[in-house]
Amino acid sequence: VYAASGNPLIVEAMQTHWQHLRRAMGEVLRRPALARKVWSEHADVLDAIAAGDAERAARTIAQHVRTARERVGAELASDERSAA
Image 1 (cartoon, rainbow, N blue to C red):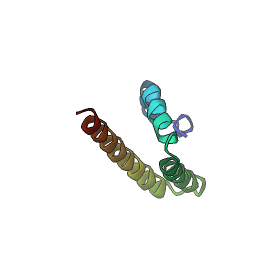
Image 2 (image 1 turned 120 degrees about the vertical axis):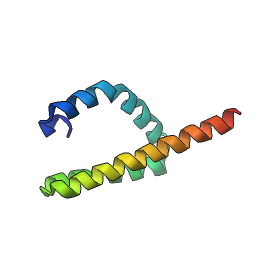
Image 3 (image 1 turned 30 degrees about the horizontal axis):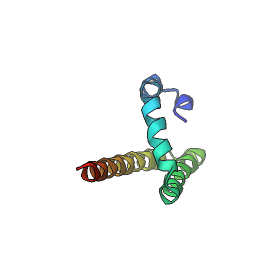
């Protein structure tokens, strides 16, 4: 999706951060319930793109990024508590 966006800034950002995103996704995929939620969010984004609804796609991806950030923060906090 990012490559098809035609936006060189998005492409560059994704290429720069891809290895970190892959690692995070690897952790997500180890948790089946979480993986289902994430794939559902991805499907919602693709549905909006396929429908040509740019506003919905933008809202959906923004919500996905916020949710992902919250999930990662919660996981890091949990890891810190476990290590203490």
